[in-house]
Image (cartoon, rainbow, N blue to C red; front, side):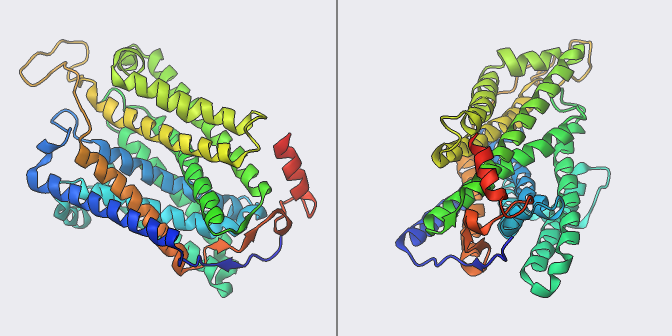
Length: 414
């Protein structure tokens, strides 16, 4: 592997300033939407007493999960010793931080009372998984900052591998904590499952790699720098494995629930007669977010085209949002089983399916938080050298030796 030389993007073109301005407008719109919901009250949203986590939580959870997965490229280089990915480790760490910050920004602004965050930061209930996650999120940011410092500072490079192990373990714990938020909620039929934690880990691999692949391809296309086929095809194949792994865990989750008679109701609701939720599950999550990307990544007529690879990664992100929507919103819409095995009737919607329609302020807040993550990324790329000057095939080798690039390309094409 040749020594990688890094650069900042110039950021002087009209396109750069145009993108900067567009993202700023979207972020300001998200802030305005949050202010509107705080002043008017949450009755202007689609949320209610049955569904208390809405569309902003869908975006927030997706970004937080993707943040863990975005660090996957750096982990592959440091933990698994794949030298080909080492030049990409800086960008991997940057995306992990910006995606997490974007997701947390949405959560804070969706609280209704953002100032109550001070209470959560000063009084801890260690019986609550939410309190654990505060430490996990803040700790993840600190670990990634240290990891990036080890990579940027030449005299600290010798410690980057050790820090990579710490970051790898921490991100697994972080995603386990995010999945456990749902796995520990025994009151919800859709959530009470130990498989939630490992499923969220695999989801993070898929979502984060898709975001990383799109950002990498866009950055090198817009800066007119060289991005070789070897690294693109390797990431594409890795993405396909993660997509297949996510589909496997989704299958295992639903088959496990179908095995238990107590979960037949929620499974029928999510998969067959739950209205919009089965539609999102089968159409967006499974077909558009799973089967179609796999076809684009592996079928001979698509797998060599970067355009189709980018389309596949974008579909993975869309499918991921659909998957998180079904988990969060669909899981809340199904009636609470207050007393299993009995019929409960009252004036408080007992046994009734919760209704929810995303409102415009919720959508704008979620999109605004996502734009905030992208805005932080392009500003950081302008200030610090995160991108290698060249990722051409001639500048990269895989772990097999100098001739491995050609073997990698031939393998990806066949």
